[in-house]
Length: 442
Ligand code: PHE
Image 1: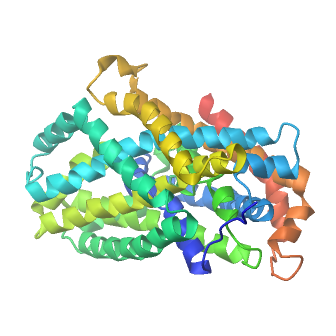
Image 2: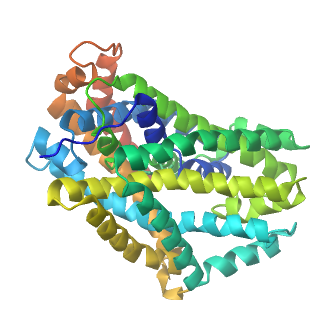
Image 3: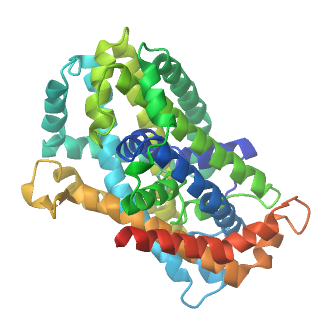
C-alpha cells in the first residue's frame, strides 16, 4: 500500500484545520444567532461550551486520526470494531448533509461579490436589497448555478490532495482572511454610533435565554469547531507522529473562537451604527450588511472585501467536509482521489439542489414552517453534538489512557491536564451534551 500523505509542516496543518473551523459558521451564522439570542448572554454560553466540550473533543478527534492514519470509519474500526464504526458512518453522512446546504449559502457569496461590483446592492433601502436577495435566491437556475460553481472550486482544491491541494490553498487563503477581517473590524468599530452595538454585544441580556438558546449555543460551538463528524479525525490522520497535538489543538480552537468573536465586532456595531435590526436572522449578512456598506464611505470596496472574505472562509471549510467523504471512499472503497471527488461532489449536489430550490423557487420545499435548507441546517445542530457525545463516550470509556499516551507521544509531550481531559470525556461531555440536547427538545 502506498504510504499516506502527510501535511508538509505544522503551520500547514494548523492553517488547514483552522480553515476547516473558520467558515460561514463564524462569519455568517455566529453574528446573527448572537443577535437573535440576547447578544452577550449567548456569547457567554457559546464560549463556555467551547471551553468545556469543544477543546477536549478537538484534541480527542485529532488524536484518533493521527493514531490510526485513517478516515473516520476506518479509524473507529481499527481501534475498536463492534458498533463503534457507526460513529464514523454517522460522521460521513453528516458531512454529506452539511456540505449539501453549505454550498448553497457559499454560492450566495459568489453572487454577492459580483453584485457588489455591479452596483446591484447600492441601495440604502433594506426593502430594496431584500428584493435583490429574494429575487436571486428564489431563482432556481441562479442559485443552483452558484452552488455548482462553488462546488467546482471546492473540488479543484480537494483533487490536489493534502499537500498540494488543501495545505497549499489554506496557507495562502487563511492569512489573507485574517488581513481582510482586521481591515473590516477596524472599519466597523470606528463608525460613528458603533458604541451601542458594542454594548449589545458585550452586555448580556439573560432574559432572552431559553432552552432553545442552549441548543443554539451548543450546535453553534460544534458547527464552528467542525466537531462531531470526523473532519478533525480526517485532518489528524494526515499528521505525522512527531507533531505535538495539544498545542496544535489549542491554536485551532483559539483561532476559530477569535474569528467568531471578531466577526461579532465587525458586524454588530455596523448594524447599530446605521440603526438596523441585529435580530434580522439569516438575512443579516445578505440584506442588512449591504445597506451598511451602501452608506459607508468606500462601501463598495469594503463590501466586496467582506463577501470575498466570506467566500474564502466557506471554501476552506467546504474543502474539509468534502475531504471526509473523499478519504472514506479512498481508504475504504479503494477509489482513486479523482473518482472519489467526482462521486461525492455529484451526490452532494443532488442533495443540495432541493436546498437551493427551497428558497422561493419551489414552494413545496417549504414545509412545517421551514425550508428544506433550514431543516438540513437544523438537523446538523443535533447530529454534530450527538456525534461529539458518542466520540466522548468512546474516548472516555474505550480508549482512556491509551489515547493519553497517543496525545503525549508516550510521555514526550507535556499534557498537564490529561486527568481533567479524561474526566471531561468520561462524564462531563456525555452528560452535559445529553442534557443540553434533551433540554432543547422539550
Ligand atoms: N466549521 C465550519 C464553519 O464554521 C463548518 C464545518 C462543520 C466544517 C463541520 C466542517 C465540518 O462554517
